[in-house]
Length: 255
Length: 255
Image (tube, rainbow over all chains, first blue to last red):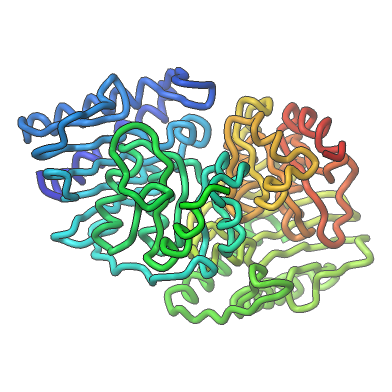
């Protein structure tokens, strides 16, 4: 499937989500703890996306957040990594600041990434061969800002604990932002509104953004600079080239 | 001036700000420290608003963030409290998530409040006699949620230091959000997307939101529950009735 086809699919998913919000037809369940939510809409949207993808691309492998699709052992060939609603807590409590995301990899190499902020109607998409687009317009890579020249997106728990110097880094930056959604934070980084983002993420949280960061020559990894494993939750850092290099010098140390 | 007249004025201010952003015609200066910014646009917008208000209402008193208008000793009669750009750091670094705000008081009683999120084109306005409106549509007061049922907006420094239990309260809530703009946080509270907001604010940061909170029967005060003085910077807490009562029991204590 090409960029335009996936964008159409994501906008269809967005419409379904808006209809569900209008009908306040949302059943909320908890997963690992009271703050880790899933709704019937997350599951419905995931089914919708997988069905459409498999129809077009029957040999594709799928990894996705819900319904027991969250493990994948073999990343050879074409892999679609899907987050049907990234930021479910925001979806439930704010009815905005959530994203639908798809990252496509071929033999573990980034091919296409899509972050669709539904309520803002902001579609970031692209890949190494075609560049990065926002609602169809080609974007330039943002300025390679240093940490002291921009805002740092942070996970609240890591900031509170100064985990691997996360709070120290927040204080070096111009300011700290917590939006509660990896897709929103990575979109902000791609648009030049952040110098970095530090959090604790699963593959579907960073797969789409990772393709776009790579396309712009920006960086993401574990806190010690080693590659993310695309398996389970990991501590995550991303940034402009310069800010990433400055940050990783601290985050790879314990406190 | 009535609600519609002030809304027209704020939308005109918003247009001027957007033109300045398009022309990247922004000169940035620092005030008290490297993270406390002011731009030529803050000052121009303030001049524009004051000129228009004084023309219509020549006896009005004015308090405003910039250009040495930040003190007012006599709050008798009609007072306009103006923030030309709330969230100047966001304005400079994000080009979104900033607001133009006006609060109008008569003999210290709230009359009208306006929070205009320029890039979102979201105008919250109203007062005790007319109710609260969002882009012209009358809003119902949000549900009176308890702290554990919603998101808490927080100032990063107060959260880091667990100042008067700010971090403990963040952990009781469903999540912590840091947007870096009082107008954006208070709008979220008024729209039911937050159970509360804790920060360190000046009168122009809370004057407009204060009128709208009062209209909805929501609460704001200093951390010890005493009234804000509308003079200088003060530690600030606001919330739904239930969450405010729960939070203030902790914030009025030292750590």
